[in-house]
Length: 208
Image 1: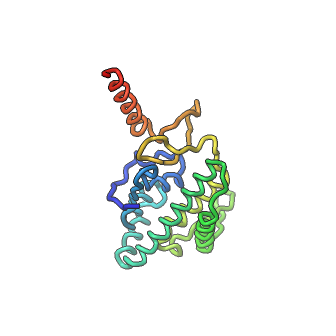
Image 2: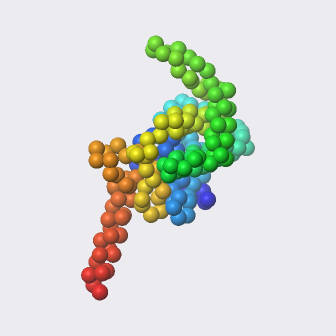
Image 3: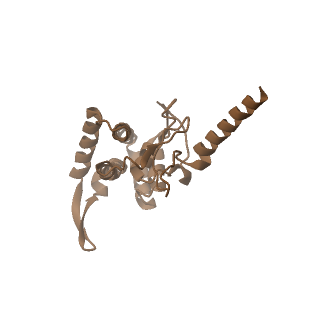
């Protein structure tokens, strides 16, 4: 998998769940996968855009990255491993297969590490499991993602969660349309591309 430079924009967050948007930081999984997380700084950029961390926390993470670049690289490696495990688990579940043992082990280990750095807090009349940002350190984005992902996987709607049919895509998304027939991650990108390709093929056939 090749890491490439990519500036994250709101249009990159179309999956309907933050864990799926995180999995989608790799594109073109159906052809030549491209990893948009080309460094820890890019991970911070994505986490801020996705609302996982606010600007204050993002600034602290950037400072930690500058002070400890090797540790930041190790944290990026860990979150990439979990991302691929989440992808493999989701795809297997959507195909009605058992999730790979290696993927489950990776997710479980990440969840246990995150849980060891978290605590129960009482807020607004309910108990909530909250990540300790100071304790998580550079693994904070990973801890937040894995908690969200475990919640998703436990209640995955296989009828509404799909893999985009677009070429050079492979993104996962939740179909929230009324008809429940959405097959593209985004009509403005993969959908229009597919329509243009069909039109081009039809035009070539008419010219024969």
